[in-house]
Image (cartoon, rainbow, N blue to C red; front, side):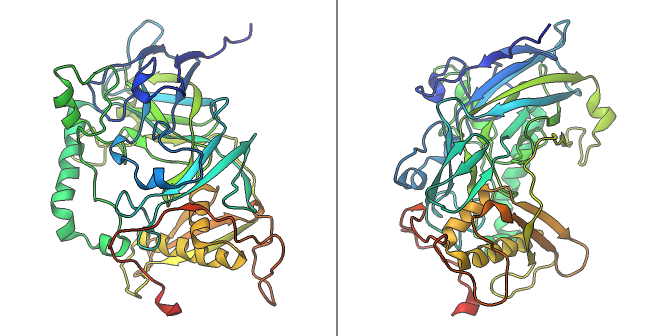
Amino acid sequence: MAPPTPRLVVPIDLKKKPWEQEQPLHNRWHPHIPPVAEVKEHEMMRVEMVDWTGGAIKDDGSAADVKFIDLSITHYMSGPLRVVDADGKPASPGDILAVEICNLGPLPGDEWGYTATFDRENGGGFLTDHFPRATKAIWYFEGIYAYSPHIPGVRFPGLTHPGIIGTAPSMELLEIWNEREKHLVDTGLESLKLCEVLHTRPLANLPMPNGCLLGKIGRETPEWEKIAREAARTIPGRENGGNCDIKNLSRGSKVYLPVFVEGANFSTGDMHFSQGDGEVSFCGAIEMSGFLELKCEIIRGGMEKYLTPMGPTKLHVNPIFEIGPVEPRFSEWLVFEGISVDERGKQHFLDATVAYKRAVLNAIDYLTKFGYSKEQVYLLLSCCPCEGRLSGIVDAPNAVATLSIPIAIFDQDIRPKSGKVPVGPRIVRRPDILKCTYDGELPTTRNLSLE
């Protein structure tokens, strides 16, 4: 007998706001956020989700929605789901929840997405000192392929995946998160020099009631205020998985998540049609609404068997990810190297972040020779299926990072050749991406060799 159609456990109505959904969504991690549904081990289920902004970014002709977005809302997640075995016994702390992604894609009737950069005064990003203004490119889907009228001459297959997939933290783990992230905020500016180079957003985003959505816990309930002030933001990945943004977690992938609370309280969200390694523009995948069809297995006592703590408690573990067999095939790549020397020529000791920044900047400047604006390339490298590598971390003083770009995604040959850089009808400088002005006063970084 054929298996049954996956059971729809979290439906989404795109005409409704995140807090109006049949199964209310949430955008924080906390053990007391109640599950919206119970699912059985090995049951095939379908989970639908809004894009991470809950529909705040539109398919229109302006980037103003990106410039003025309220980032306290990130990210809207579907769940939590309580997972039980065939006898009704829930997953328990110390277990591993193995989540297999069987199928996924955009929601029917909503086959489009977007890539963007935030304004430097509101979110910033990896290269915000070079690209301080808000920008946006819209992408449309043709089956497995994506194309954008704002970045012409490019078409590529998507490696669709959820950016967020994780379990709820225990209260003990939540307190560990909040304590260590608060310590970073309190002391980081005095001890860290990285921000002098990267000019990025805050060192950490601490709990805040503004923009908080706690699923079934409404604002009218007595416990809402206390939980909202404790609940962790969803921006970074942590021990529970969370916002890992691993682009290869597509069809056939399996995630082995540590369980910290009874029932596991599994949540997911932040669907991406495609993403490059690093998601460098921050709002940098092709963000979309979507669905997952998946099933779970409970590995009893799995944390002790398979996960070695790397910290002072048994909670300091991390998930394991098994990549699926379905990926785009590319045979030719152009690879850009970066070393840990910043734009001012300053040497950094084995700093992989600075090295990756150099690799991305090298790729951006190179591709502008083929008719693209720098901002077009920045968004493209954030969402196309490019591969980032930490190539060397032992040969002092330079860390070496690389960024590999599949040549086949372009409608022109981008490899270096003898003679002049080719020009022709395929090179289109307009239309450009949607963009706003930058009205702030923070300093920007320039290429000193071009001055």
